[in-house]
Figure 1 (tube, helix red, strand yellow):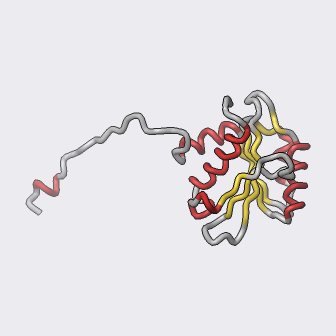
Figure 2 (tube, rainbow, N blue to C red):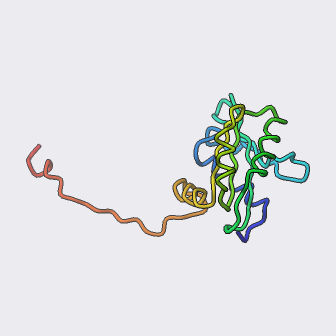
Length: 149
């Protein structure tokens, strides 16, 4: 939360790359979040061939806040303006029930919602912003070795 909005936009793009989107290549992604970005903070190719693009909205909001339906409506409008069919709305906050219902009713655009808890879990799962502190190796006796085989 102490990082800039620009850093957060880069973080969500980096996360999607680490998850395998864009063929796991950062050059297949783009951070767009600047004034005049028309509601799109980033774009990433869905696969390494780039058959489809996923448009990204990144909101670094207080973890006690919620993202409501109006924000999702703006995002759908931005996707429509790009002629896009897929989007990911990623936030440090959480989503209201109305926002989730609105997204589930969308047929022209497929939108994935990632809240703060899910974002943190995905970052840990895909080794983004974390490092391994300890690794333990547990060994057992290889009985095949002692059976003369």
